[in-house]
Image 1: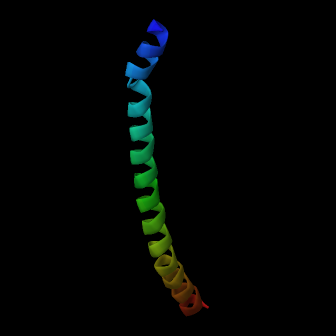
Image 2: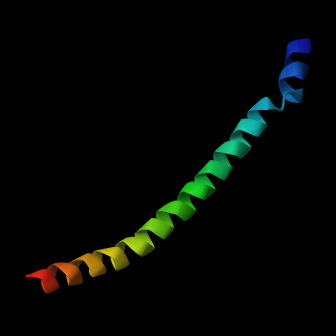
Length: 53
């Protein structure tokens, strides 16, 4: 019974989950930014490529 109480009182796993959620949120923001800028950068390179031909 004492091990069960210790297990239920342990918060180390919750902290790891919180850090994981923060990392996932940051990754989502980075992916969104890269996706948004990627199309603009691709358009610039395409324009540059056609002007050099």
